[in-house]
Length: 400
View 1: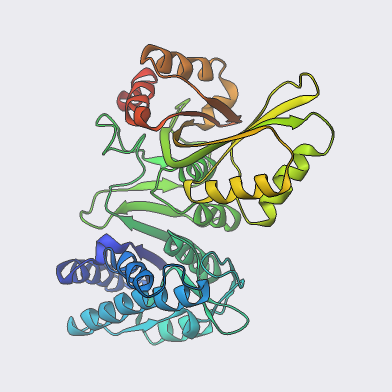
View 2: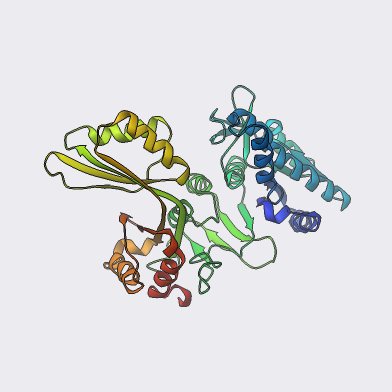
């Protein structure tokens, strides 16, 4: 069996945890399995590198940021290989260039194009555990690139897909995928299984357990994902397609506090205005999420949308430079709270039940967005945890 194992920064944060991970990987290796390990940088080391860079240059070039950030993962894979060698097990560490992991050329947010598997397969044939840097790749200019925060998950799934691995295990500091963040919702419980689509929505909406692009890849290539804890041996959550999922209308509640609402008031009510607005933002790689357009009156209309906190000021500047409007308002004190569940497609009244929970908790809804398996509301950020708990209780998610 070929197993790809990914461990996050907290799992390799110090000497004891590195040896804990080494022993877990060796356990599978000694059972006769081929093992590929993907690692993040140790603990908060990526943040340390970012702080170091900004001390030198508050606005560092993205290419140079990728150059320094990739050293974090190179450190952790080398130390892991040393740990395994000290335990008498042959291992080899490889960075993105040695693999080679080809990506697009967008520094700080590159996408994987293809992975050359020859080097990994050669090392596996020599009965070594192969330890690969997560989060990074190499572009057509032979420059290092990074895949964005959480990108090590995507590295692991991409390697699992390229090698046709039997399973891809993502190890975190929690036991699996929960009905809500257990640090914010004490009644949250672990799910045994969840569909790719549900996991993708939860990951995109701020669940934080998996990188959303890793779930997209897993679904596309049919990679069997398991999310489990590196700190214990409990069974995790299996992410896969299938009809034998838990019979739940709603699988989870997620929150994203990295949100800002931009309201553009008094735009001309004529064809092409929305296109001009969102095209201008798209050209600057500003991702837009929820959109609300008012009914036009007196030749004017209003458009509100959400983006990340980080993009809000840039969005405001672009609109001021390129659009004709009366007023613009940016509110960074908001958050998105969502419910997700494949069962919502065939059950009426789910949204109403969510809105009732918020009404009972005296929480005002600013905007609403829906899909087949998701309902998202925009609320004041200070009410985030209270909203999550109210919705979780209303759907009785802790007792299914």
